[in-house]
Length: 115
Image (cartoon, rainbow, N blue to C red; front, side):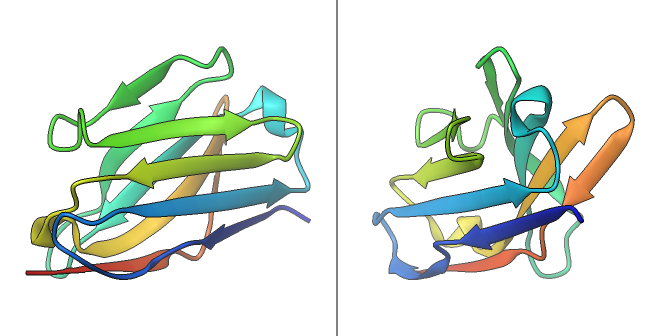
């Protein structure tokens, strides 16, 4: 059974930091590209960051320089370090695992950034 479990969301003031974690079970973690997506109220889900099996990363322009994605294959965990948070970063953040055409999703974790 495949499970992606996010943690680390919460309430933070603008300018603050959070670190999200997603622990994956039921798949060979090191064979999957990982990603973080977010969905703000009334908006479509959008890509925040990706990290591929090689360790190469990719970021949305609106978080570049503020967020960092990383993975620890020994722990089957992907992280999203979020710094200099803005109110517009508020939303539900989802963990994603991808191998070829197969996608897995976590249930999401709420991030709220107050002004």
